[in-house]
Length: 121
Image (tube, rainbow, N blue to C red):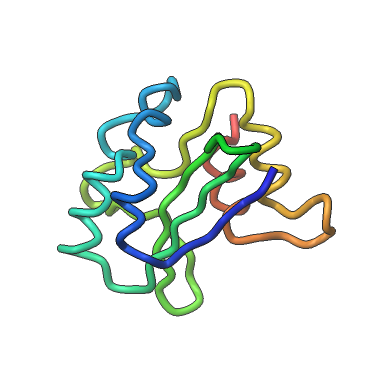
């Protein structure tokens, strides 16, 4: 599994993860790239960070972040919704979080911190 990070706003369209939102039982409209792109354009105040977990040629996890100063937070606006965070293929959440955390490399990543926090029971 590979975790790819990008700060390119074009990836809201180029790497559209709407199907992944639909597959995730916890996915909502607020996880869609259409909503997150609009929110980013209107309210984003930091640096954009999009994370994609991939297995072979398939995206199995996605999450949008905003880095404001030293704080990494989910993109989407807590004043609008509490449905923020990652989406993933059902049954792959643990693997995505572990790989995103860099556990196989012994160092944490920004993607995994957000993914792991959002997936806590």
